[in-house]
Image (tube, rainbow, N blue to C red; front, side):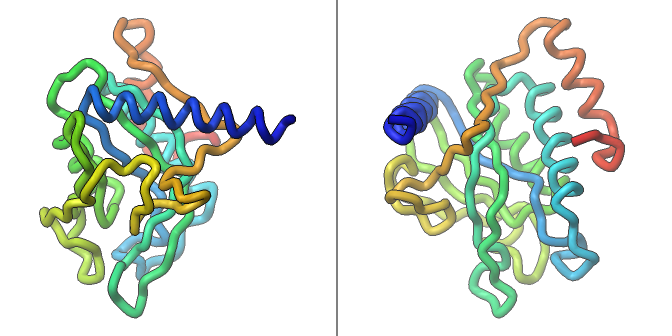
Length: 202
């Protein structure tokens, strides 16, 4: 019974995010990274990656986006001898206010957190990978775009997790952060977004 209930919860979550992707611009992004300096520096600890993700979450919320925590996987340094599949905590981001600024913000944060790429999709369309760093092994390359084809939900995707044929895996402690519209709601995310990730508690 518990397994059935969990499957229903996951399915309803997937349906909600799918609806967002049909009605609003959307994307996925993470701050997780194996190591700085294009993967050649001292590897980040899990705690450090969690701190980085916490700062990214604050920045996304401070911009007024709806954010949902998801679990995904990504091939870092795709197509090179240094390629590795990285399991990471990611964010599904939706522009529920239809401000039209999501792509630029995701690219900005992708660069800030040294990501190979972000995924972005216009309302009702399939997504595309957009390169956001200049690392020699980064895929697809700074500013380059790779179309992902059809809608990313319920389909196998090379850069998404594959469990029961679905690209997104929802953790049991999945959290959704609604749009912060009022000053009282924005105060916390804005203040936290201005901190250094090393100073954040996780």
